[in-house]
Image (cartoon, rainbow, N blue to C red):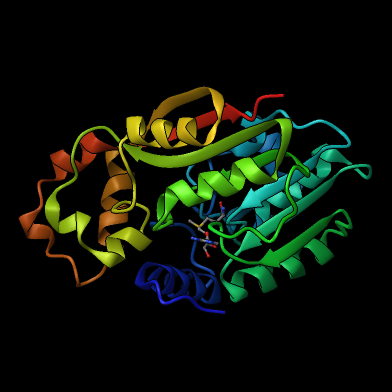
Length: 265
Ligand SMILES: C[S@@+](CC[C@H](N)C(=O)[O-])C[C@H]1O[C@@H](n2cnc3c(N)ncnc32)[C@H](O)[C@@H]1O
């Protein structure tokens, strides 16, 4: 499965490498192996290695307030942690679908689901911009640090709106910006794969959601600490000349956000 889009290719290679070496996150500590993004009583419901294989930037499970019987879709499900946590919340009468374009992630997520005997979860390989999911069938969409990676975010929101049932909820943790990023970062593909360069202004993010029909949109910033941003930059490899970049400009501009929105009933 491939597209001619160089961003898809770079991002897929980046996360295939990550999961093969089982290193965590967009940056080495954007969610540390200890994983401090979620309440501990939630995390301890899955084996430690599954809990620590997280590449996210927040806790969409708590944000989603899932209920038994719901159908949940995770955009960019990675190694499956959020899907497995969601599966517990929706119970046997609910179901969870994870979509990811990286085959290595899908394989790991399927192995993890088997390990915890989660029979109400399935993983589908596909693009967020062309979701392999029927229209009007999903109660809640979750996503963790993924939409910023898409080269066509407007298409992702169009697809999210299509698959949500009327009244359905979007509950997403993602990276957005407030102010411009330094130019060398903006044009770096590795910075895109590292969840920084692809991030857009919070107002633009909201505008894209509004234009496809989402309502009651809320974007609440959860600021990154400097260490997290430093780790993200360090992770971007030789392609980026860090000496030419003002760290303060990046610290000021990039933040993780809790985002919720609804498809009108
Ligand atoms: C930063 S990781 C987050 C994974 C997971 N949500 C988590 O919290 O651990 C991004 C994931 O999204 C997937 N991804 C990125 N862009 C995608 C796209 N356009 N379509 C489908 N999957 C995508 C990658 O393959 C990767 O597994």
